[in-house]
Image 1: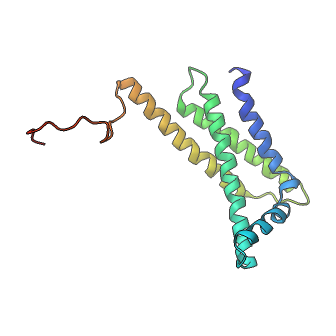
Image 2: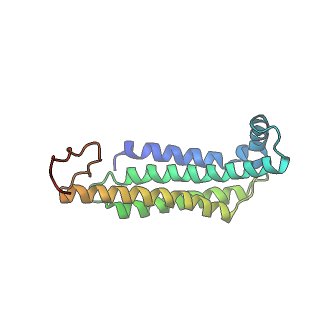
Image 3: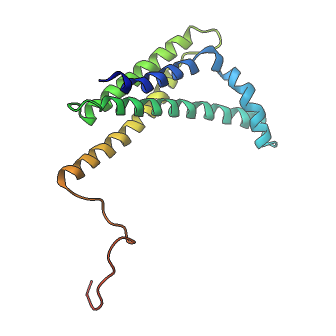
Length: 166
């Protein structure tokens, strides 16, 4: 695999691991998110603001690992002899290794807590994107193999002939 194919996935994995550092713990992001949420919803209670903050943090986990999975999937498919199935399993393994390393690192920090729940959230983000990516890739390959073109929409289909029965 050419080096240029793995630069972006490795860069994103590095960014994900940096986001798992002590600079981006809940207390640190709360200082940024809480004032923003108060501006957007001034009548929100502190409990609601905290709940939204927690949801945003979990959505960040899903997104980070979904993007990581997609980047690795695309990079791993660069080899002609690699199937989408194999590429998706390899991408998932890389994402899981990254998630475990991130949570293990966080468990050693004073300002962070390693969490098995976060590994599950990370895996869910990666797995969801890989299922969609692999399904789309395999469907595309099936269409190419069978010589089937994409179905026509109603706007593209020819007008019905006059007097023709349906």
